[in-house]
Length: 260
Image (tube, rainbow, N blue to C red):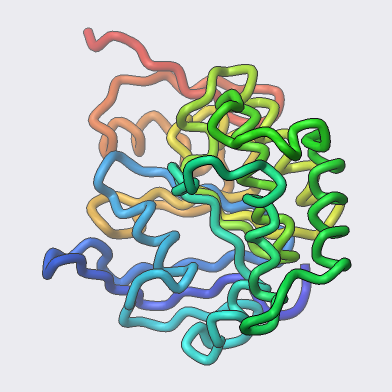
């Protein structure tokens, strides 16, 4: 991993409705890396992702692949960064194909129409994610796991190299959680993508992330490899939870236990 970091955040402060949410956050994500942001409810995880994606005004310095965030026009940013929110808004009656086609918006001229290349890009992404058979189905008729793949498909159709995933498995059962995360990791390795994801399941985060950032009360409480962040002492202190951390095949496993 050489060159400028995919994401570099320095001294980031964010307030929402005059309420401070983030306090002087620093964050670096190398190109091609998967970094998971964890932390208790209200720690500021989703706010951090929205600030990195340019969706919130945020005093501080944010650079994407070496370019200051404020220097990127909206269309240019959309070609670099794709965000998958926890609960994306889907227009009623929209088909899978049309929803994924929205990802090509940054490449469509103002007042213009999608080109043959845009349509081909959507078909390619749908086939790549085994969604070709769902192209004409209404998105609302799909299962949770299928919809999550469609949300990823739209992000990939943008051609962005940085994926911001906000709790990508929060509404999925364990089988679909694994399916989605394996797909993200495979796409990351095959296409050189960078992933910055907030994750609720600590064991899953530890298995897939290269590094982790623990947010607590709007500040970075710990950062580093999963084995350095997923410790019983840190989790007990910041989550106020009783847990055991066990060695796993791909990373630490966090097991809740009843307090004594």
